[in-house]
Length: 348
Image (cartoon, rainbow, N blue to C red; front, side, top):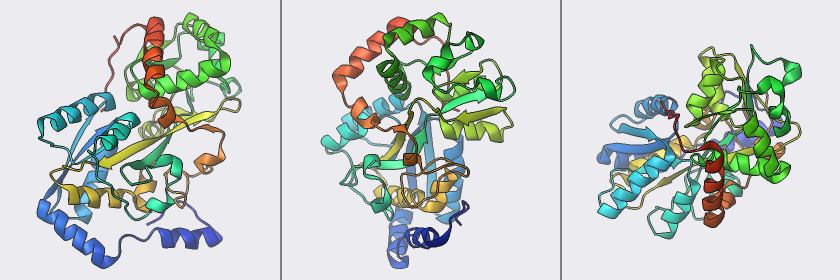
């Protein structure tokens, strides 16, 4: 059931677009998937939300067991590459942050082209035209703050505001040389404000941690106060856990957005079950359950927010991440500021 408010003609359009596979086609897909018996997902980031969704999927489609392996995306991609090289794929479908992997896997002929119901509604910037990969959700990267320790009057509205004395020693981000999204966020900041911003930022004694989950939890505990590099739906998860945190869209800098991308491997051991899972995941009800923006134009945004492309956004993540020479240069340059990872985080 759709739980976000829709009104007037939009509601009727959304209901039509929300329809799942025709009954006969869905029955046939389910029968084939059930004969495969299981589906294995590799997912980058916190696994708890996906474990909850897996239970819903198993209840909807009994007879198909669900297996999830979670880790950092830049760890899981290497695991998948090793399985491909050995000719022994264990994974059926992957949902990862590392878009260049999907571009490369498609070029190598490793992905299965598949367009589930609703694919046409996905914005072109969030999908491969052939259906090799597409957005399972759209992550926004707004500012985040501790609501008990940061007054409304002090909320940052530009990267320049994080240089203010009240935030010295209390800003936290993942390591930009280690985390692709974070590197991209830092890149946009230095493109707008210059590399001297980075020198000034490091003088404020910021804190670095591996991964967004540990980063955002540290704001919830009050160990840190603010960041310009949060993941919106992680903040939502922490709010449910009664942590005093909130998201804030910048008024003077663009908000980065990026698609958490999914695909099915051509040589997957359970390809039909993977098709069934990704078709289910793209249904509006499941898209809403992700508690962030959908890549589908016909799915409403989170309550209280506008459609994501209505904001001033930076939406060039794929182009950025497929510029290999620039990425290599930036990793080295950012590591000269932060040093290598010494504060290891986690994904659970």
